[in-house]
Image 1 (cartoon, rainbow over the protein chains, first blue to last red):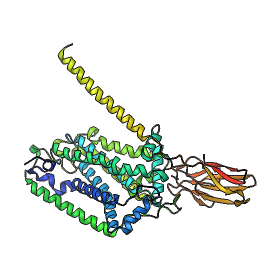
Image 2 (tube, rainbow over the protein chains, first blue to last red):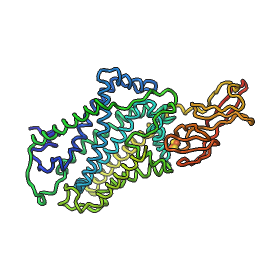
Image 3 (cartoon, each protein chain N blue to C red):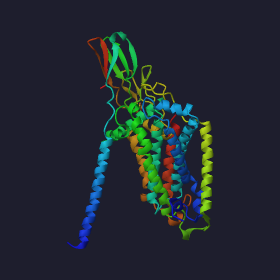
Image 4 (spheres, rainbow over the protein chains, first blue to last red):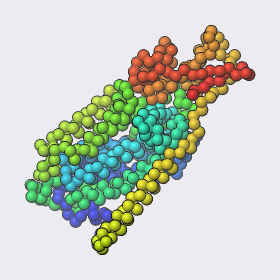
Length: 340
Length: 138
Ligand code: FES
């Protein structure tokens, strides 16, 4: 048989522990599936979307209300994107709580973190592409936040927005960032991430000498479980998309009307809450960035998990990392709930 | 010069060449993206005949967001762009509030509630020769 990427990811047999639900939560695999859905539905939306400040919101209305199944396709795209963030976060926490980031997987952990950041940026740019009344204030405050960064802020702002008043001009750049500037890196890093999973010995489980069960499963069994996961995810997506339509607001003419949405998209509510406290640079840039840096450093400066602990839930040897991740998660959740 | 060092030298040359061209390309890319294609935001607004704003009037403008006052001492205007991160303020009794992060300003534009730190910008208003009002946001 010719070796292929599929066979690289699916060797003839793997330790059963690497493919147990209660170990992996199916999270990493689900992100792959969600990204495929996002790719397909995104391309379908491109057949109708007009990336022009005057027509964008109207073309979204056309997709949503006129194109047969257009609203459903858009809902699928929306819900896959939201689920992607949640599932990625679960995946990240799983990796930390099972000490799966230990050597030799440290680098792949960083790749994964990079993918997570890209997914957040993709979700934000995608939300901006609605280009209706609901996006003006989050876009304005979000991009003005970039400007508060000392020295390079104005440059980064131009890079992201292209200058001018974001609410009137950002569409061209955000469109290109969303479709290519962020998507291509996600595809490249994503393939690399998946490749490294196998390269580093598959999903993290204790090394052979410390393993208690030596059951292995076959490639077919692995694929069967993957398909089952996809199936469950599909049902959830279809249900969400059928009953909970993606948000949409009236088209923007001039400045948004006074009753336009001022709340950030849900994944940035916690940042918006912090911004109420004071200096935008500290609360809107430094603290979120600091959290990212802490997460990135977990495999490098936190106590090393013991070999036999790698791939087990909540092992003693990486308590500090577990505590740090829990504190960060709780902090973000509380801030989100406070923001109403 | 021994063979080995010549090989090392070539290797150095090659990687140096690669790094330098990479850095140049990256620099070029960043400069390429640094251009501002969009016209700078408008800073001069024609508000029509000054007689539309009689003495004692107080008018809310939406684009640009501002409040225009006509008092004994003439025309004056206060920008309603929040000095925190740029949302448009809501007009309220004896002041303005920001819907984005809750800053508050009094009627003169001074901060009465953080996170904003700077007072609202007062805007220059001029009456042209034809009797029209011009508002300057910069
Ligand atoms: S933009 Fe007005 S309070 Fe933040």
